Every structure is written in structure tokens, then in C-alpha cells.
Image 1 (cartoon, rainbow, N blue to C red):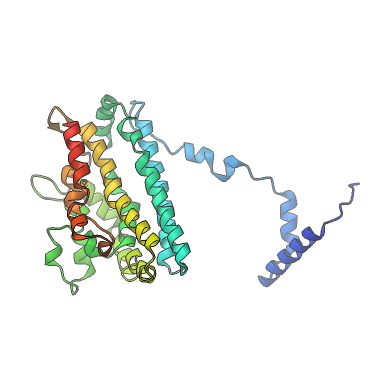
Image 2: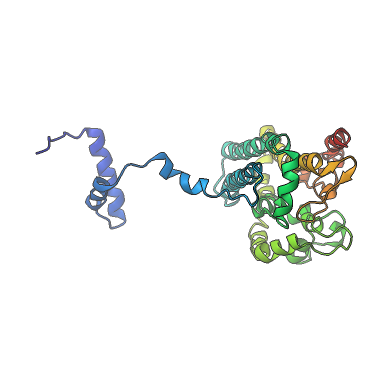
Length: 321
């Protein structure tokens, strides 16, 4: 025989609220409480799926530092997921309060900052000789194929701001959205340097994701982050403008430059330049000063846009050549 326990008023109140909640859905609270009686406690390792998580790192070679490489890229994709999580809430119209909008932009800035600041794991943290060996086993895969990063771009701004500079003047507002998608800057950067034909890396990516990206581009044409920000910057909120400028810098200057630094460190030696595993022209694809991708052009002066990332790139090239 078990001792009877007197329920406190607080517990009784919570039970009444639960009963009301389940009753609205035609459910019986007693049945759910019965399930709790037999349910086990939740553990940390079950909650984060630790065993599954640790089973996802599958290096393709016997080079020990490949574990660092694959793990860091998986971490990157998880941060991208968090950025998209915040962005989707904003673009869905769930955020109408300026303070909440500012908070979500700052969250995204922190995620990008964490990624950029931690990129020394890839620059200083990888053995150059090991990297040179295992990277060739990864062809034709490339970080270029990160669809989540492409979604961040599409959800951030109008497609015209993602079009390669050589094609901007060819497009008009009357052109179909497919014309914009075909001429995005990153597609131009994934063509063979000599022939101009699409690399296998690009063809793989298009086969898997083009239809989905086109659907997303249509969905967010009128509700991307650039469109949503107009509701808040009209109020002249300097903090929001500063936060949006920081987001532009993290996504389109600091993050590409972090990759550029890795490429310079590992692919340039004694004036010899190695190609990327995906066949992309990384020397023109990664430096922001060539692409000048700007999510929110109205928040920057013409001089700022003209010098987009230029000084940083030149300093890194001179230091590593």
C-alpha cells in the first residue's frame, strides 16, 4: 500500500489547465496521465540523439584531419539551419514588433559571427599535407553545394542583388524569374575556367535543388528579408539599420573571406595555385570585391559598395603569396 500524497493547489491548478487543454481536442487527460506513469525519464543523450549524431561523421580516407573537416562542415550546416529558422519567422510575417525584429537579426549575426570566428579550425587547424591528400578524395563535392546557404541568400534579398555583375544589365523586371535564377553569381562561378561549361559540381547541384530553389524564389519574392525590413527602417531605428548592415557584412564579406583565407592557405604555394575540388574558379568566386553581393544596397553608400571587401582580400593575398 502506497502512502497518499496531498496535491498542492499549484499542482491542482496545472491539472485543471491540462484537462481543459485536452478537452478542447476531445481528449481525456486521464489517458495521458496513465502514459506518463509508465514513461521513462528523458535523458540528455536521447534528447540530442547523441549516438546518431556521432555516427554521421564518415571520413572517406585514412587521413586523421579529415574528421575535423567533415565535422566542421556539419556544424556549419547546423548554424545555417538556425539562421534560416529565424529568417523564416520574420519572412512569414510572424514578427511585427521592432524590438523582436532587431533581436532576430542579432541572433543571425551571432550565428554568423560564431562561424566566421571559428574558421581558424579550417585554416590553422588542418594539417596542410593531410588536407592535400584527402581533398582529392572528395571530388566533385564542394561547399559550393550548400543549399542552405543558397536559401539564406534567396530569403534575404531580391534576386537582382544575387545576379552576376556581368548579367545585371541584361535583365529587366519583365524577365521571368527563371532568367534571374539562371544568372546568379554562384552559378557563374561554377563553370570551367577554360571552356565556360558547367562543372559536374554545378550540374549535380542543379539536378537536386534547382526546382526547390525556384519554388522558394517565387515564394519569397515579395516577402524576403529586404522587403520585411522596410516595415522597420522607415521608423528610423538606427540600431536596426546597424544590425542589418552587420548581417550583410557577415553573410557577404566575412563569411566568404573566411573561405577565401582557407583557399589561399591550402591551395596557394610558391605562386602555384591549385583548383577547387568542385572545379569552381575560387579566386573570382569567393572574394567579395569581385561579386559585390549586397543584400540591402540602400543601407550602404556608393563608396562602401565600391570597396566591398577589397582591402581585406588584398592584404591576405599579399601575406600568403
